[in-house]
Length: 141
Image 1: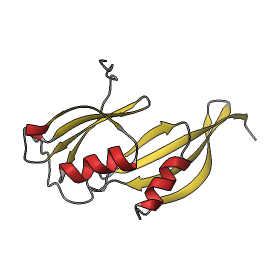
Image 2: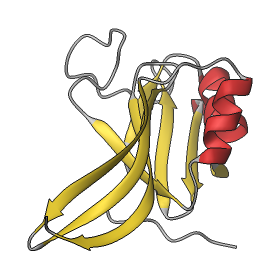
Image 3: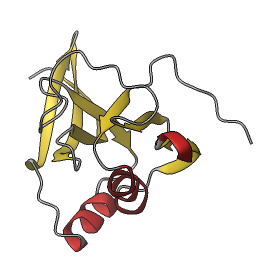
């Protein structure tokens, strides 16, 4: 079955394909949509979120500056999931520390607030991933 690509799909330059693929698929629960083994490239999805991982130095690497840990400085990727608890359990089972512990956060959106139960974790290369569980909408206080 062919997957529909989102209009914006980030491609993360990574240092160790096997390690990153294991992290995203086994630990975080992403599905491997397809891969190009010869390039150490994979297209992944989790619900409606999609991303690509591509090993630095294999295939094409678009390098705009030094690629030093942590990669992806200045950006975090928000990934909406139904429930964050299964992710938290797998991260704990694999002794992976959270960058930001679980919090309930409400953000103003025009004349209401939208709520998230969320946490942040870094992938093996330091990319910052923010997983969010929807808490609904409420009136401004």
